[in-house]
Image (cartoon, rainbow, N blue to C red; front, side):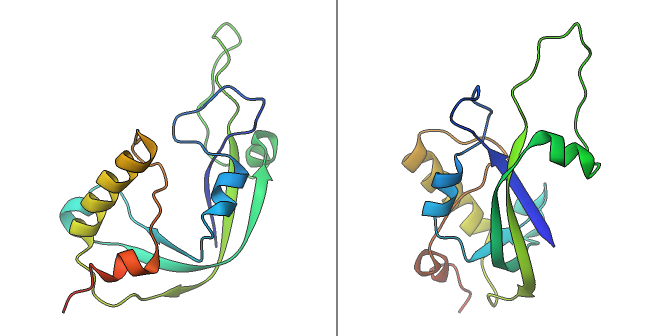
Length: 137
C-alpha cells in the first residue's frame, strides 16, 4: 500500500500543505497514522509501518496511475504543479488504545506552533514519546 503527501520542488510555486523531500526525510518517519474527515468525532484511525519512500513522484506519473486530479481548462491560469512524496507501507500495526481525538487536537496546536500555519489535510509529525502521552491507561 502506498500513501502520498504533497511535495514542493525548489523551483515550483508553493502549494498549500506541501513540503520538500528533504523536509519529509528529516522527519525520519517510521509510522503513519491515517484518518479521514470526521475522525475528530469518531476517533477512528489506522497505523502503518513505513517500509520505504519515493521522494519525487511527478504529476505526469500520477496521471499515468489514474490518480484523481482536478482538471483545468486551457483558458484558466495554470495551477501549481501537483507532485508527491510517497510512503510505501508493509503492514498495519497497532499502537494500543489511544485518546485519538485528544491527540489529534493537540497535534494540530503543536503543528501550528512549530510551523506557523496549518492546512487541513497537511501531514503533522510527532515522536513516539509524544504519542505515548495519549495512550489510554
